[in-house]
Image 1 (cartoon, rainbow, N blue to C red):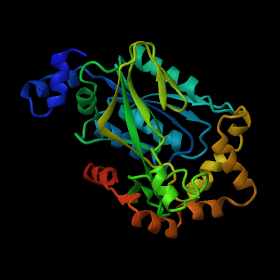
Image 2: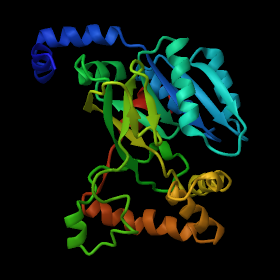
Image 3: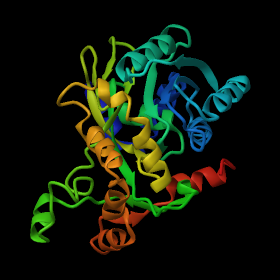
Length: 316
């Protein structure tokens, strides 16, 4: 790393020169987000409007066998100019890497994106600067082509308006603390121990990027990776039981195409549903007793960053 750039990065925001360089880098960023969605009518519009308010320039979406109002919402947002392109997929299997690669290529070739966020409908990338391009310019320091972003998982309170749920796993158990409390680390607390385990990447479009494994990693020429301290991913992966069950049901067909050793968690959840045990699993992991225990131990805390910002923007 160039020493002057490194010094500017370390001194930001105290150095006026560093701030000016960040502003110049931000002006040069064309940021596009890709989304792969299926039956997301109660979150997709909020997701797109949230990220647009956070500085994303446009959206390219792959809609996979949607049977609710998702396609109608996307087409309305396309008419507004927020969604740039929609791919409609009808294959029974879920070809995530293929679809994301196609969207990244289109974003680069046709829409001249130089930075990409590849997301799901339940993922909300929150910038402390309230502008993702500002955060990318700051974190990348003019040299990084990949940014790591940590996830904060929602802990659902089973409400219908799940975007207003204030509980997130913000301080997962360390393994030694879990052992001290004699917690079953293999099953009950796999979501609440150690690192969040769901780091995602934001990346440049140069260097032939190939997002991998649900956008957790990426293959790119000459990678220079920095962890972003300015961007957090709020992941509404389990929203309430109704959505939890619907999500598992959507995977009944696609998991048949997953080879051995891949998608084992999804296969397990499908098996629980088919054996009538999914509600028991939900209550065991996300019930009131569990929430109170995790709050008492500092694992789950209240964080209204996403919902406060959306209310301020008039999105919810």
